[in-house]
Length: 96
Image (cartoon, rainbow, N blue to C red; front, side, top):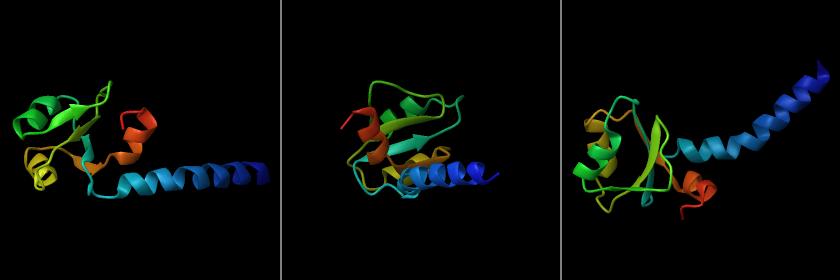
């Protein structure tokens, strides 16, 4: 039981900074856009003047950028689930 707690604590300690970064609202040029898989996320992003970045898209999230300061709010108004700071994910994916 003691070893399990140690490993759980180490795991949480390593993941906490990453989780905290994702919890931040977008304040930079790169946004992590989280949407239902049945939604045309790429089409919505393009229609709002943004563009997809990165070589891959997942079923629930994409990286996007836009110069529009109201981009996040406009995405949420179109039914996107959440918009978060995507700079950490972009660095991990090598898209910066």
